[in-house]
View 1 (cartoon, rainbow, N blue to C red):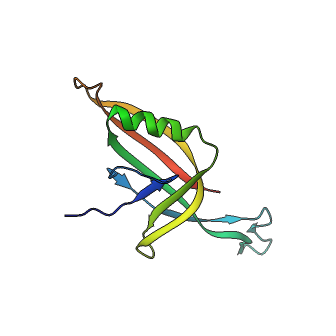
View 2: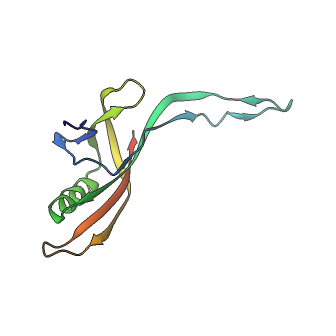
Length: 120
């Protein structure tokens, strides 16, 4: 059985994630807010900005690769878009990188890694 390739960062296919969410949000201007009449006014600058919280169980080799990716200021990310069910490419950065030892093994452990990819 073939799995869907959910994430590719800078040309490298990432392992199958444990969790994968695609969140879409809007960026509003400072002029948005409640009016004197009590109604809500939204001045949307960008609609559908993508955030992808994701987590993996990885080997030490992948822990090192993901840690190196975290240091890059801009990433080219191909991700599985849950709206269109197709791959989409955009520029993103990594935020909230967290790694923890899941299980101690003779090969330096099995690691749980989580982070959020945020679209520029």
